[in-house]
Image 1 (cartoon, rainbow, N blue to C red):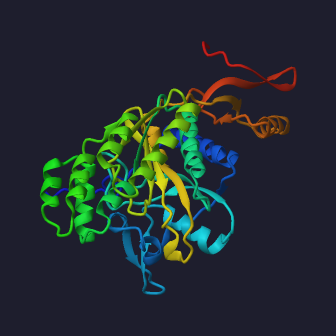
Image 2 (image 1 turned 60 degrees about the vertical axis):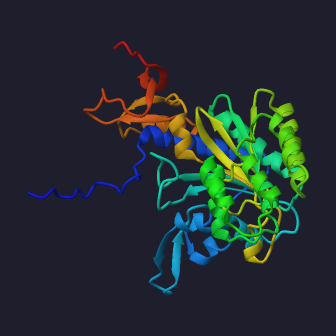
Image 3 (image 1 turned 180 degrees about the vertical axis):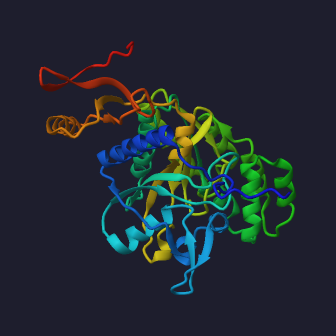
Length: 395
């Protein structure tokens, strides 16, 4: 007989979040949002669904391929389920807030991907992010990197490594070359994959690519490591217009971050162009526990499609991915109380909950069940009064 499909089965790489993990995610969500608020970032909540052109204009093919598309039954227009929140926040900054000065915004909500961006990852990440608009200086880059580092440390990430690159380096090497966007995308992919054979084949194809640019692109494959990479890049690439400034800014950020976080490992990979096409300058990734935990950078062009081009820098991370690599958090101690409708008992329970305690009322016949909450105290009646005392676990 043919196998029957199970109505309870979920699509591939889509999963329920069960109590312990959900509690951990919620605690981290609150921690990161509170951390962002302490820096002056204001919370926004964009919709999960938007007109497709609003979600994707100016973001490149990679984001389009990650976006689920459907037809609006009311208007007939094509809608998209967001695969990344940054374009939406840029729209809010440009059209709804429209402030003249600096704007700091943060968010936390689900995004949906047509394909997972790495093996075993979820296609429904819970994306947290923070973005600063209106300041072109490196102070904004330092602020978002510092906020990401401090948030991850507070989450319990352990030692961190910050890896930096700058898309302007490749752009400078390709400036003036008569090459197609499709060819550039293949070059970016070859550089990110450190695929020397593919890159060599590509560099023999396009017309108008000068020898200096071709040799510079080839050299990028070996330009990764500690701060000495920047010195080597100056020797190999320094005479190409625009590259010296990018290298200066990378070195400036590294110097200040190392002074602020002495135990932070800082590295560079000048060929790494992973991420969405809207990055316009410095980009970074933060690693811990052997995994990429956060990604961000500068994207000064992201608001241009909304009619208001503003300097912008920020970062984002997936809370589900983050929780999967962190040690489980201890259960929050709770108070066990008997079930009852007596006024004094109900008042005692209400008072404890108002004070911030978790009080689990044990339903009749379920006195020995223990689930998500670790009850280390109990509410008992002593001389006519309800009082809290340590739970006798041996009993």
